[in-house]
Amino acid sequence: MPARKLNRRFFNRPADAVARDLIGCSLIIRNKHKKFELRIVETEAYLGEKDLACHSAKGRTKRTEVMFGPPGFAYIYLIYGIYQMFNIVCSGKGDPQAVLIRAAESLSDPKIDLSGPGKFTRALGINRSWNAMDLVGEKVFFCKRPYQAQIKRAARIGVDYAGAWAARPLRFFDARSSALSVRPK
Image (cartoon, rainbow, N blue to C red; front, side, top):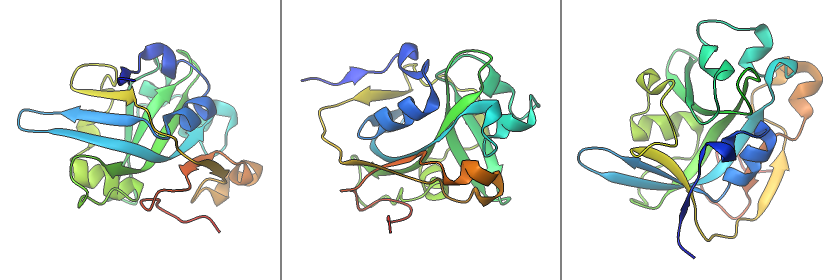
């Protein structure tokens, strides 16, 4: 079964469905010199304005503007003053949900460490210039490939401030992967 490129409809769904279905998918990044292929092994869903861990819960701001737009675009932000976070806008226009990519396995170069959201963006050179980038284009896109992930769920990481939302099982991961940012307990 050949790879199938994911289209905008794939991302036009609730973030928890997209986050689960991205596990095992490939992310392809093509630049002038190289092509990278990665297998997504860990994600987190952020369910919009009602989700107190989601940036859009505080309303529409300059930083979150892309989240209120159409699905399938990148939402990049800086955390702790050093790490870029790579998210995909999900759901429909005006429903600001997103999926954070927490970890991946490099299929192009197994020596690249992508086992955490900061390591992921640093290794791939992802920065805020990627914000609002179309992720269903020709240079950066996701593909569904034949791969059987052992998908598990857990609470998201580092969102204790979000009250009851912190405990919701909105982190998805491939239990077989050695590249997870945090091993399940």
